[in-house]
Length: 173
Image (cartoon, rainbow, N blue to C red; front, side, top):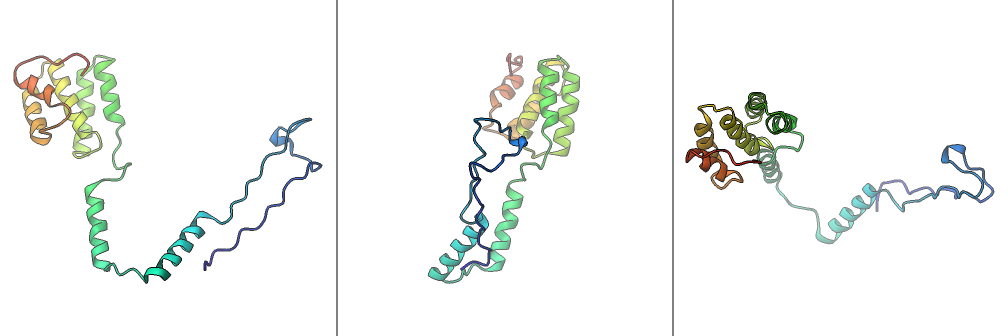
C-alpha cells in the first residue's frame, strides 16, 4: 500500500537499565517514557490518498484550472511573513507612549510605502491620521479622506469622519 518503510520497534527501557545522568535520574526517579508511533504522518497521508484514489479513481482536475486557482490564491492573500509589521508597532509606541508623532508618521509612512496592502495597512493609515492631528499637520483631512476611500466600512471610520468634521482625535485611539 505504501512505499514508506515500516516503523522499527523501539526497545523499552528495563527497570534495571541505567538511565543517563542527562535525564536527571536518581534514586526513585522513573526513566523517561518512550512513545512509538505506528507510522510517520506522511506515510498515513499517502496511504489515505492511495485508498481514496482506489475507491474513486484518479483525480481529474485539469492542470490549467489548478494552476489558475493557485495563482489567484497567491494574489488574494500575501503570506503571513510578507511584510514586517514591526514599524507599525514601533510607531504606536512612539505616538502613544513616547509622545513623538513625527517619528510615528515617519515609521507609518515607510511601512505604507513598502506595504500598501500590508497586514496592518488599515491600522497604519488610521494611526497616520491620529499622528497628523496630534502634530497639527495640515494633511490630516487628506489622510482621513484617503482612509474612507480605501476602507469605507473600516474599523476607524469614526476617527476619519471626526477629523473631516473638524473634531479632535478621540483619546486612546
